Amino acid sequence: MIRTALEFIKKELDQYMVDREQNPASYTVGNVVDLAPVVQPNGDLNIDENAHVTLMLAGIEEERKEGKRPYYVSTDDNQVKKLNPPIDLNIFLLFVASNGNYETALRDCSTIVSFFQANPVFDEEKFPNLNSFVADPANKPWQLIERLSFRLQDMSFEQQNNLWAMLGGKYIPSLVYKVNMLTVFETKSNQVASAISEVNFNN
Image (cartoon, rainbow, N blue to C red; front, side, top):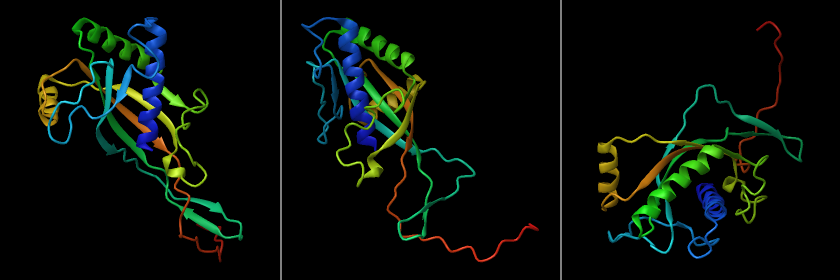
């Protein structure tokens, strides 16, 4: 599901920047946004200066909500299957303006802000290709997502310093977005709901 989200955003942002800049010499489809870790496992900086933006996952947390209840669905053999509710995840995405030209990198940061200002929410109604990278949705529903909601994450100088220290690099013009991701049900469950044996109208 996380891979689905990042591959989708990479493609959409890539196309948006190409359409916006109209500069075939520097912005071509498939070569603008690079989905990759900013730092390699050995600590070396992993920035492709031929790309304009490097996108990576910077953190994950669960969005805990009260009142979530299991879901019940009928099966082909007339039983009722109990499913856990879908998970709300918050993922933090780091967008690094990785172009070697500083002025161009600053413009790329502005373009990223413009992209999410115009598209703060992504769902299948507006973006039918939201799950286009899922090869086998029928058998792998856990890879599907229902909605992505983006919000620019405010970061103090201390938080930015901690982030780049964790990455082992020096600050590069960048943005962090907090993304609320609603996932699709995991439909493979062995939990069969008990049959209703009594109905009490007094309670």
